[in-house]
Length: 218
Length: 233
Image (cartoon, rainbow over all chains, first blue to last red; front, side):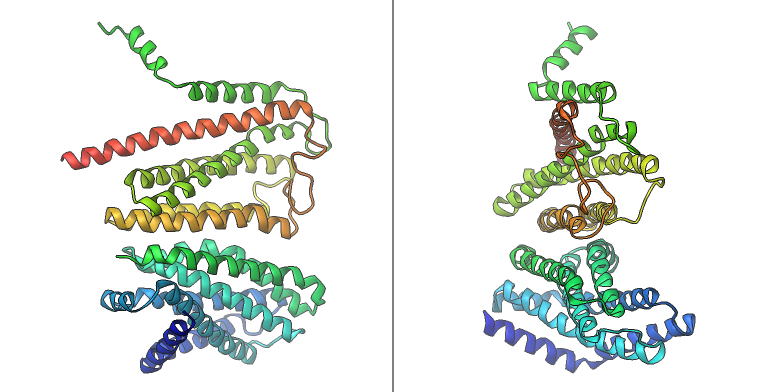
């Protein structure tokens, strides 16, 4: 199982590297969005707005990035994976791969965002924890939703309407945690949000692990 | 010879006991809910009676959504089309109850908090849960193949119920909330629910749950007839 997951992640990274335009497209998407935000706001403003804007950019980048994980796979290739390996290994590998992708995007996002707009964060370590937990949540929810949406007709619209309501509570908790990190509140205050987000992520991953084998069959 | 009276009588005798019970209990909860003596509490005043309507409707919504998850799991394990139809119609009834719950909640909020909607963890969670289930309806609509639709929406129904429980029961308890029963506020079952109120509240929950099971039962029968009709044509 672990070997399968590792091989599959390796394969995903290789195929991403082969079609560099997809990742370059995402990169440009994030940079352009940040630049548009910079031009519309000039310089931001109060910390809550900075924080909310960062996570909204992150949300849209995430939906765009993860949507392709199942939707863009051809049916033939999916059949090929089906004959090769355990579906649970595939969903876990996809979630881990998308987590890596989301982390890479968020680093680029925070880099350009700080460069153009400025960075009022006080507790950088805590903010980094918030980014990791938020990215993990986005990756697990969006991968599962993309697997569901890929089976239906108008999958790009479905991707948004299925994932946004699920992401709202996750997003709100993450925004609160990162806001606390920006204000430099102590770890004892943030502890409960960290635990909550970790539990939410674990729950979504467990659901994906249990349910994906039923989605898989054609 | 079928005179109108005999038809009515035979229709009425066709109603099984639990449907009668639901009629009696819901009527009792409405009449009792407006007449029973309630504790005089500041701010709440008479609006405390909303407990008999809003809370019972949401309880039966959670029960009916649980049923939808149960039948979704059953569909995934045995693949019978009937389970899929029941699961789907449970969601439809649940959405109807959810809308009633949001409306009664909004009325209560207007008279106790002063606004139709407040930015609160419990309310936002409830709204997200409703959006998750509305998305279920759209998802079903966008898959034409019967078996594929049944399987994928069963997976989504299980996912949705787990998330709804997190959104309306767990998250509001973790953060501050104005809503009674979360964020450290007293809810039902503590001091503000006295003996009189319990005597209406518990029968009302059972009544609304049975009533929503009845609605679902009718919806399932309609859907089955539609499917049969499609096959004949």
